[in-house]
Amino acid sequence: MPTQIEINTDYQNAERFPAWVALSVFSAVCLAAVNSGSSGTARDAADKWVLSVVCLSMILSVVSVGMYLMMRSVFVGEMFEMGLTILLLAFWGAGLPVIMNPNNIIAVDKLGFVENANLYFSSWMSLAAIVYIFGSLAQEYTGMSVRDVAPNRKNGLWYGLCASSIVVMATSVRLFTSRQCGDDLQGSTRYCKRTKFAISVGAISFVASAVIAYLLSMGLSGIMEFIACCFLLFLWCFGVGFITFGSAPGSVIGNLYFATWVSFVLVVVLFGQSFRAFMSPAAAQTEESQEQQSGENGDQVPEIPDEEDI
Image (cartoon, rainbow, N blue to C red; front, side, top):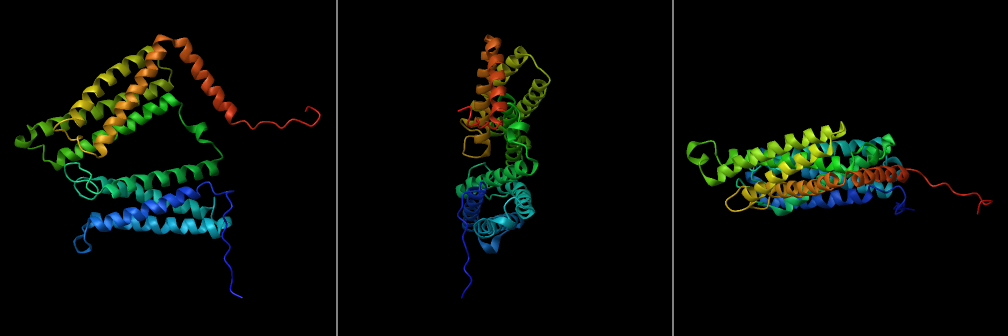
């Protein structure tokens, strides 16, 4: 009799299975987008590297999905799954900057326009999927919850502002060099001037948010945080206007557009929180203590009462 392959559809021990499926789907979309965006006879080194990353991601994610269905006991939570995850995380970490580089004209063109929307969004979603898988595996291996090592909500917002500011700065630098804004003739144009402004805003915001995030862990006073939020809100109000409106580098859908608006939203949220804490410090302190207490209680397993106590 032929050997029958049993498909394991049990939900137990399959927390990362949807993420592997999502990674395989997004990788397949990336592969189709890469093939439709360039011809096979005119591929340069960047195109070949992106194609290798996407193909490897799709193959290994499909293999992982198959292992979840048919050989879960030897794959889930084992070194095999961890090795594939680390390999894919490294490849996507090295491949995404190449995809998003305006000089390569793969997902965005030299002006920052999204040239290949399917590749642009699917590559970001692929990175998000593999990061989630790696975080889940790290939590499983170390036995630590993300809540144990993650900063509190306010510090997390400051770290998020650091990350978005880096994207604004790095993307603006690439647009500055791709448009040859360093030349005397090109450097005087409105586009190049606003690109310089975007670089300055990203750099200032990154340094300020990183310093504030560090000082908060050292016990920074609410007044100083409120002053910093006021400064950053003033800075990003002008930043959004000069970077995303009119003849500006972030006026088109792309990394700079999204990062600029994310930074602005984060600053508005931080300003609202710091303003509330400045006006009512006692209420803010009580809310933080309740948040910490709820986090500690969330990690505790409720005790089952004895039959005599019922």
